[in-house]
Image 1 (cartoon, rainbow, N blue to C red):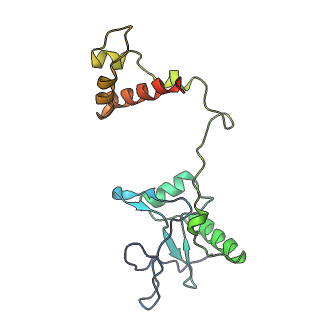
Image 2: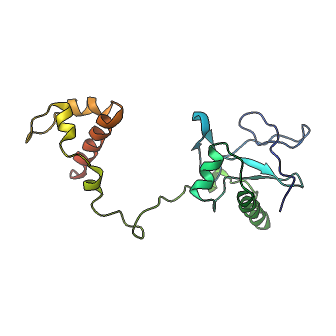
Image 3: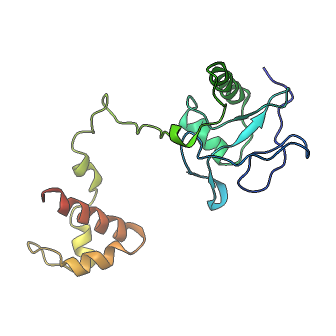
Length: 177
């Protein structure tokens, strides 16, 4: 595979160019859209180039979650990651396509579910580690509903109190249609 891999120069929002004389191409949405990256930024395409100077994206289908996170954390790609990205680019070029995704090709990683695509059993019971903790923190009496205004105010707060309140709001909506 490639040994002369590079990461060139480019203004924000454009793919890198190997030489100053190369034209800048605007970046697209990539295969996965905007992904949260290091420092509170987002990434759509993290690109590199092969020894021929051809650019290709590193964020491609086929990478594991850990590999994608490595790129988003700003760490150096592994040799295996470069190989996966180059093979993906070669396959697309053989099909007459650009190595980079067009906006209409936007796709998202499928969420991983346990037990062969089924939602885990008793997920609500497992989500509530300390029954009654929200009620105690809000000073609500047992056996009576927590006032909606009190719950909404708690949902805006950070930490466990906010998490518990937001879960309570979600669960309150589940039976209603």
